[in-house]
Structures are given as structure tokens and as C-alpha cells.
Image: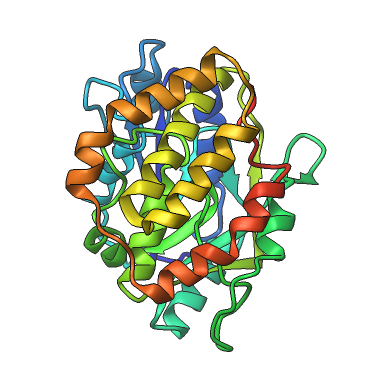
Length: 298
């Protein structure tokens, strides 16, 4: 069942053992996808282990932690029409990449498809799956699943050229909710995003993470996104809503401070989305306010 339509891109930082498990899972897929790993400046021997144990993998070593931009670096090397992102603590289910490629082959305005996520070791659905499945966005009838306003990088297959044309992930946002800006730019260029239950990604959440730092970056990036792309009233409404609902602690204060410090470049690069795209973002407001899967806590 070898399928040469999709390349898998993985970014990693100091998670050698988890990455090696993921690469083992990817190597066992019947699609046999090419795999590119960007090692974001690991100091735990990650690059050496990958080179020794998985010589078939294309290994990029920029020498520093690029965050999500490490994916951009890898996509420059992709030669297939589609690219699947994967985290170092997640892996694709057998047949899912081929199914995604079939859907992208079939629908020429479909820019990305996001999979169902199962949390290991017990295989339960990630809470975010219910929100994807119940997305309130109304899409065209031909979509293979619910229309989405954003996507989860570790569970999504995209058109390579669409990713490149939209500019990839923002260098300034680094990591943490970085998908929202790219997803909105894809929508502005006419691409549709969809959730597809027939695809599956397994996620074994790493313990080697800093949830507080991720919260700081996620909140900062959400604020930046609002003022980069949304009209003034929705941006202000979202900002005030976040100010009322996030925990009142140092992490939240730091996130708002970082967001404010970036205001000059945000205003300089601000490009408000067309009304049709803003309408999609607007219908997500209620689900964002009541979400139990995307809370700025930790």
C-alpha cells in the first residue's frame, strides 16, 4: 500500500525517546511516507539517535529552537503534493494518510483535513474532538466533514503549495496556538478546512513540557491573532472576554504584557480578513467562550 503522495514532518526538542517511538510507528505505516524531522536544538542526543537508528529519515538540525517555524524549514524540502504534520509524542493510524490524500485529490478547494485524536494509553477521544465534530461553521455540501475555522497541526494533512502560499507558521508566534493565524490566511486565499472522522492520530502526551509557558504563549498568540486579522469590534470583544475569564495570575499578566509589547508590529502587519472569513470566525465565538478543551490554564 505504499503511497508517495504525503510527506510527514515532525518537529522535536529534547524528547529523544518519544521521537524514536514515533518514528518507529511511522516506519511501520503501510503508506511508507517520507519523513522529515527538524531537531530544534536538542541537547539530549536526539539528532545522533535519529541518524543512527532511522537513516531513512531526512534530519534537519538548525542548531536552535525554531518552534513551529521548524515545520516551515522542513516543508521547503517536501516534494510531495501533501504534507502531514506530526508531533514527537503522536503518530498517524494505518491508512489515515492515504485516506487524507484521496480526499485532497478529490476536492480541489479542500486545503486541509484534520483527524480524530485518540489519547494514549487508553485510547479515549481528546476533548477537542467533540468541538471539531460539532463545528458551527457552515461549509459547502462537498466537504468530507464539518468545516473548521482552524486546525491542530499534529493531526492535520495540508496541501503543500497552499501551506507555502499562505506563508507557513509565523516566526513571531513561535509555538502555542500558532495554527489559528495560518488557518485564517488559508481561508482568505479560498481554501476550506475540514474535520474527517475517518482519519486517526494517536497522542501520548509528553511529560516533558512546560504547561505554564505554553499557556503564556497560547494566550499571547490568541491576542495577537485577533488584532492582526479581525475587525476592531470583534478583536476588542475577544480581548475583553479573555481578560475577564483567564486566571488572574502572573502567567496571564505576562501573556497580556507580551501581547501589548508586540502591538507596534501587530498594527504594522495588520490585515483584516474579508467579511466572509470574518463571518466564519464570528460563529466560533460561543464555542470558544465555553470550550473545556482550550482553556488558558496550567
